[in-house]
Length: 280
Image (tube, rainbow, N blue to C red; front, side, top):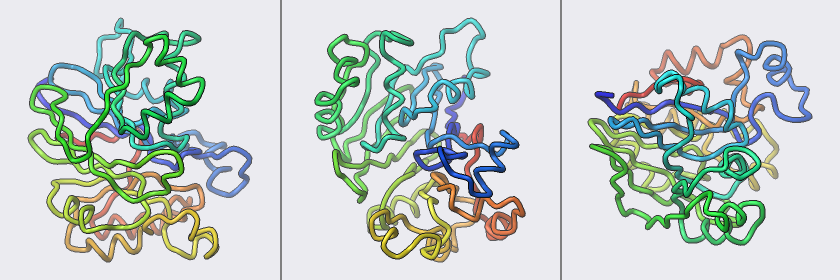
């Protein structure tokens, strides 16, 4: 390949859309028309060498890998060459289970994560089995230390605030010809996040909720995410540079009438969608 491509593999919160057990209008619509279904948030990066890097391994991993098959020879056994993990919530790491002997039986696939995430995986089955059998090989990331992943492709892990019950949480500055800031899951903006957004060519950001009124005050206290309406106000001068991902099934931006989505796009912002390419 003569360029580096980042491709959206998932754009929903950890449970995907439709979500298990939910009968809301958005989930029912996605059941009736699978074109409106969404997988948990994930990003694929294909470098010039043709190596596949996956950011987060979700429970929809088998279907998500099919979304990049067109970039590889048809006879290739398509598995990621490396995986980066952002944090220890189920939509972001549980897809590692497919690397085990019951399914792909991979051989020492590098999995990059923080020390706390490494400890979490080593301490919990079935993921500890993957490590013991050398199906995955943990490579510890140092926060804010840049790693060269491929020809003209480097990535810097940036810590972000989140509910860190079991491990800390990362976002990623991805640099090639352009800079992509990927931050699908965080609780509130910090000076560091703000600076990364403003200095990057494009940012893919947490768009879990449209507004704080979407869930009860008590629920919002326990699962805070920066609402889209507040991000629009914060970055209203950065048209064509922000894409929202990690949408919850409660988010009215996904309503069938498309009213809020049209409003978003008229203001120069976009929603992530499975298969969307972002050249970097």
